[in-house]
Image (cartoon, rainbow, N blue to C red; front, side, top):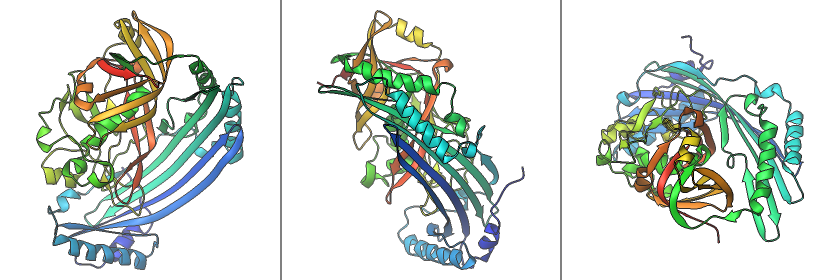
Length: 482
């Protein structure tokens, strides 16, 4: 494979003159746009460009970091010198020696698949489309607010190292969000297009100009009005069926974050909590029912966090995280894997050129089973079907949680019946996944994502993808908003 590398980046690497065991340069250039409309009127039309280089050096078994947006030999040398002195100072207190085994040589490239480039539409045409979406969302007088948003990111990264790594990756990232708020007196209901900013994909304008765009937009408005007269969600313990757009959040919060190895190590606790998972749990912990199969899968075309290499150059491969309900491996970099002597995945990721990579989830998916949606519902005498996350809360060990959804249907005698508003459910992670009773087939599998997964100090916001089929859970506590 012929790789693509930034002109002069290897030359800049060769100009670094320091007594180090290894040095790597990761350059990134990002062009991002955010455009939105509210009630048909333009609200935002912005474009940002960010470009720079992160320098990593290895000395005395310690990694040091330095960043610069001065893309000259002097700028790189200054950043590398700072990283060198940082590594020397930190090596006295290191908790685990790092070697070049954690920075192996890699060569390759990755480019997001795309059918329609971002420039297919001009900014003016996009704004006109967003305005038209807002007007379509307003299906009646009870719709009091509409909004439409499109976010694009074109990100290129180059990685070269002193042991011969040469990696180029180009990501085209698309996020859309359409929402309507309806009001009738004191009752207010909000409906979005499968959850706020949940439609996240790798690709181009084909994910904006979809054949079903206007059908989806119309349904969002109609369901917002429908919820005004819907019955309140009952309070009971029953069977819960979750749509893929809600499993997005369930997987993210109760599987993705607790399995990040730096949380298990204790590195992350002061920002967003640790994890109930212990190192001894790998290979032993019954995380869920035998129907639970979770993969780290960076290979799915179009999924939001697909890639070939993480930001340290580690090669990304599809791996089972949980198989038949048993925890097998964590979400951690080569450094974390070495520290814990546990298997992980290629998921050391940084949000920008001026941040060091840390353990982050990427594409974390629930693998499909063999049941159709109709078969799942037909086997339930009493239950509730829920779509689209509205709010979430989970404790700092990722153990106890409570989630709220936008839209729900009652299941009675094997059929979807009345619409329900203000649906909520709560649980404890292992017990909840242990109650996984039915998993939908590949026809029910859908992928969503989030552009704003936060972690780390200083904070890093990265993009993640989560695919899942329909799934049913028994004996779940649900409740309404009253």
